[in-house]
Length: 453
Image (cartoon, rainbow, N blue to C red; front, side):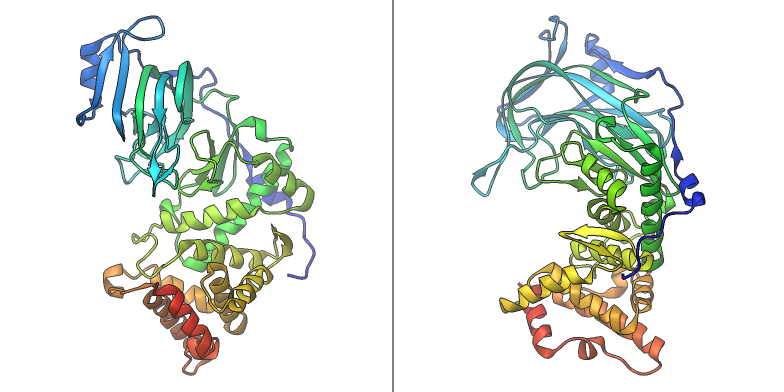
């Protein structure tokens, strides 16, 4: 924490190298203009429509050719879906379509009008085993003339994906997912992502693919940053005893299809909102060697979302926002890394969480996840990080069914404390209960109150 930043070695820089597309001509893989109605009916799956909704082939395309028309008088999620096969595994592709909308309105959540996802071209979530279960084009609302939308995606291990032309989206966010109105789709195409459409760099564990407009630093700087992300990845693996997605590289991909309230979303790829300050993060690394809170956080989430051991987040994990940041704290401490959270930290960032703890306690509660994070870090300060390595290694290798059922989040907290106590006992050689040695009775009361609400 107190040491100054030490430059990366030449070997670490070499590990992050450029990744080029196999075909620079953006070869067309699939195309459908819907002019052959019988062929389209056979190759696309059309949703069954509720009353007041319809999906039709109509001659209302950009040049009065045949296209698809989806309309609904009530908010919902309707789509036509194409199962695409024969793709090269783990390869970047771009899907595009021409879209027109009329009076498209989004969702209403808890009585408050929100946009939802409007009319949207997206990857469907039909294959739960796919690394990339979804992605989306930009969302269209209101009335718009014909325009082209697109999204990039990574084909799965089988070289397959599901593409949907939708009105509304089957998965909700805080903006909701449902929409009503009318949308027309035409000229759906899939090509290999054009050579210059994405800035791509690849390292040992990470494949970065972002819109070139965000990159104002040189390749060497990006490679240095990716080498730091590799170190974080390996620290997470060391802490948890497992890796996500069976060790396949984690892609980080900018996407136009994300609401304004989301900076990025975990998975493989990690979807990085194309409308946030991506450029700023890279510039901060060039200037200060700041590893970047947001991406470290999302990689931390990905270690839960794509864990190879089978139980994902795990029944004991009551709040992965806490644990994504906790994994990050270990990586920062291990590598004496620089990272800013309002204040710039070198090494562990316990000071940030200590302030959250003090603010929470001053209000007479421990409702803050950051405050509880601080109490977990106190245990590491007393007994060392090995207690968490031993505890997490066991938890991530124990099926949920063997952990039992939990009535509330406080019981999940107690489960973690049990495993950490066992690890501390093993390390120090005498019986330890960390809830007694590292918490006051009042703190436990406040945590219980917070986690049983």
